[in-house]
Image (cartoon, rainbow, N blue to C red; front, side, top):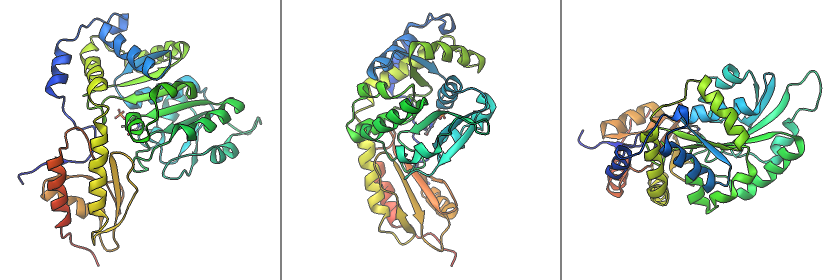
Length: 346
Ligand SMILES: *Cc1c(COP(=O)(O)O)cnc(C)c1O
């Protein structure tokens, strides 16, 4: 097995040489004392890009999301989100554990919610009902095959939340993929959200870290919660420097990842072992295997060819493109995918 092409996730990237240099030459200090100028620079840079007041650098996107939920809810409140939401499915039950809130799950279209879906699920004031206090959107939607919201779809959700007195948080783990795909401007996002979480370690290609954006007051509260979660870091500027470098060098190139994902999807859609491919908008390709085939065994057969991807269900497989996937790798992967003869289970 000579080739190794890793489509399992956009988190598998290694820092580039330029990024490593930026990290090694970063000016650092104790960030728990508020003395790391590189962390401060990253937080202010992202906050101003999105037209928000302040930012908070955290170890993971799970932490930025969970801190935001803790900031925007009280125990016994209810959080509204799509049933595929990362905050609900993949954060270890954190909403119950940290925030003691219940969750109302909606069935969005590939994870995309509308005000019409949300409004009937907001509880009226009644002693029987939990208090609906927060809506969480995800952009792009991971389980939705990288589906994106356009800002024009977010605006009416913001209006509804405003009228009903709910907070609105964005799990923007892959928000830059959405910006590149839709052409929406980062600076127009801040006005719609109480919190935005952005991962630096996904498509942006940094090794570690996420940033939570919000008002000064939210971030003050969030800083205390981060401390209680054990997420206060000392000379974190070495990591923040990677994030700054990524924002300066790795945003526009995401269009290449999106082209690569489309090429993979096109190749897959004509194969006998593929039933259907979700529409590709960004860097995620999810396909369903044909009747008689199992996702697990196709993933295994691909692995033998040096192509790593993941089964996301008994019949679904996910491939994610990223910074460490070159055009040559895409050609090689397509060549192998086309000539694969996985055994079926008829
Ligand atoms: C990856 C991801 C996160 C955060 O994950 P961490 O591994 O904790 O950084 C949050 N939301 C979505 C949609 C993600 O894909």
